[in-house]
Image (cartoon, rainbow, N blue to C red; front, side):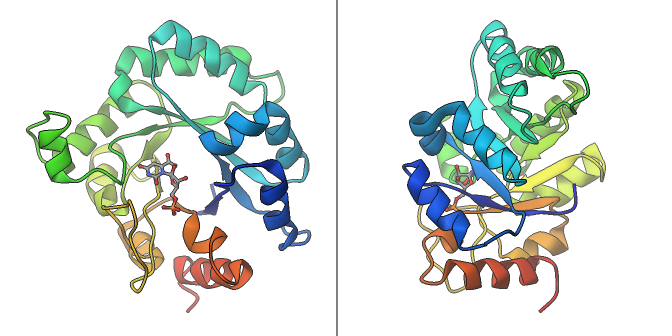
Length: 237
Ligand SMILES: O=C(O)c1cc(=O)[nH]c(=O)n1[C@@H]1O[C@H](COP(=O)(O)O)[C@@H](O)[C@H]1O
């Protein structure tokens, strides 16, 4: 994975997403299709985006009993997307089942989608961990424990905050994928995100890829916002 900046296509419908993509003319992008767009447009939209040559992270954050996750992953593998994800909180058996489903569903000749697990959402704070989830360990310990479980279950990496990348790299190795949302410029409002980092900081900390949504999609000039963020991420400014 060539350290992509993954654009979160968080739009309510296909037309808005395609309008956004048309700003980039023929450039190949790496995009994330999440629940909002997938629930309104379904698998056909994902196939359309793939056929335009874009890399696709299908972010449906599966979290269910192992058998259900396995069957769902078997279906998702047929879409030939590049990345899919689950919640590590579903446990090791569930994560192993996700890989079994992906292996089963991947059409011969295609590459199995990379499978990554959300450790703790970037909108979660230490206080929420204690008060809402009744988890008494600190964030870094929880995230690194979930990352070790993810690796032990045969997945390719995790979704985490850039702030936790160094500990995960130490414990799970440099090749283990660390995909980091919660990216904000210093001047920007954090909104619902809490464990945030700038694109430069994410690079310094060793993120494999960053996920950026509203800072680009809701910008006055989305094209300029994308190029600025991408340059910062790649250390070209
Ligand atoms: O799995 C994800 O992509 C994800 C995990 C996480 O912990 N935090 C997180 O923000 N995301 C996604 O990353 C994107 C971030 O969007 P912005 O906050 O608008 O940049 C959204 O589409 C979220 O669903």
